[in-house]
Length: 300
Image 1: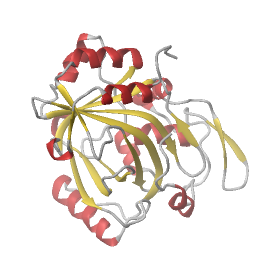
Image 2: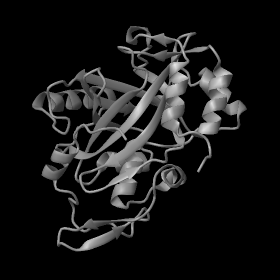
Image 3: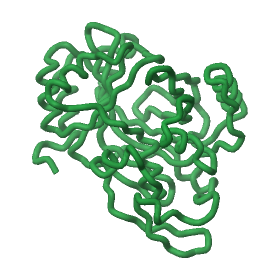
């Protein structure tokens, strides 16, 4: 691991020394190009120095670093996971996102768009358990998938896992771009959890054309984008499924010690990321257990 400061503390320091702006000054960028990077604390320090005063930091009620919890939904056969693993052109992810330090809760549907763009649709979801899909939520999912991707929504969507993390959001003062900096990621599903390494930062550049300042700075430092999805690497790690193109990131980013799970017949089974430890049964984790456990929790 890096000998530098742990990522949480480093991002808190960067945020504290950066001029703040309110939420109303942050570009929404619901349709955008995303590029993701995993960097060490050493590289993050250099990135902050290179960006200088070109960025502001999101500030809400005095806070500049925020805790998030997301609960992801999928079918019993993990349809959306396999669509992403196979790089299907028309695909989606569905989650509730809870802003633990203010900002409420939202139901978010992320669609894969043309030429690698991301199209995000969301509705307010306050007052609803984060692992529950209401009839109104299902109508929103059906209508959006049909109108935007010409897809029929699956009928068996249920909670699969949750992720907790902390985020600092930097906004390009020139407008039209921002970068999120995530630390302290923990993936959990009611039976097990996997933390990310404490000395790494997951950066996500969000811009209209994929040519944000942060992308230029990282290229100059020899850092290239990576293929990573919090949901997909969490599924691979927690369920022992093949990670394919995410495998290098998964091994670098998450704690990859093998774990043990109780199968339907009561046996304990070793699970890892090769797929050889997959538990028997078409529905490995009871939905009621997930609904109880995939609720907002502290970001660690």
